[in-house]
Amino acid sequence: LAKEASINEKGGEKEQTPLHLAAQEGKTAVVEILLREGADKELRDRDEHTPLELAQLNSHGEVVKRLEASTQPKVALQPETQMEESTQSREVLQLETQIERASKKAKYD
Image 1 (cartoon, rainbow, N blue to C red):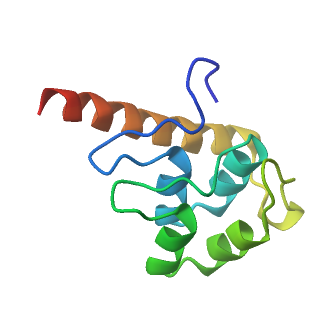
Image 2 (image 1 turned 120 degrees about the vertical axis):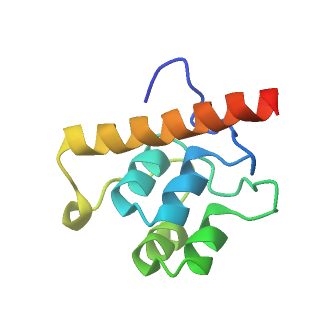
């Protein structure tokens, strides 16, 4: 993650963190990275949903398991879900970019 970005920074119309977005999209490996780096799984978005609730609502069972099993602040990556580091980094950067764009758009709307 970029050093200047807060892992728990909320953005976009729904005021979601990167963990909210990854859980909602079913990105298990990204969820694990974010948790390992200290993402707060208890934060709520504008609609009062936690990342766990978004994973449940979108039927992402593996993400639900990871979020339920995680302890704050950090958990280790599970070997069965590890991806190449470059792929993980790319997905995290994409989520950060989405949050940044949504945050900028919300400021101008």
